[in-house]
Length: 207
Image 1 (cartoon, rainbow, N blue to C red):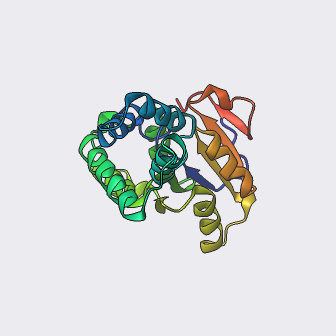
Image 2: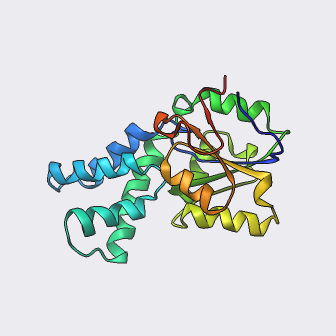
């Protein structure tokens, strides 16, 4: 059962909750980092899959500063992120990538809740994808990185004068859970069985 008692605002993660994007995001990292050793890129992909809610900026820094133990300039980080974003824009705009049960739930309940997207994906890319996928109209705001998700949620609470008890976050990663807990809002796990028993409840299906 999906228990939204006393909730008027739903914050949605994007990747893995609204869009089935993980295989394409993995491909993007492999493509952008193609000149580096496979064993190093594999370490990044492990980190990427364990930290779905973190931005690509954090992940590229992890690759260079932790895996390769070398510095990464802001200019190079921006270049990598832009190259990655181009690949995402080319490959994630097909409607078959949408998770249909989630999107159907959003459409069905668009007038019952105020909805926002808070994602680890790049904000500009995210808004572009939502426009191309024709789902932007269901959300009051669509926000992403480089602002961390913890801060995105805090900003929403402040901007719209929400109280934490009004909100919940639906996400598929431990980073989503941590962002919800940091802002004292309820968390509902989805599409990641390791989140069962954590947060307010676990959504097995929206169907």
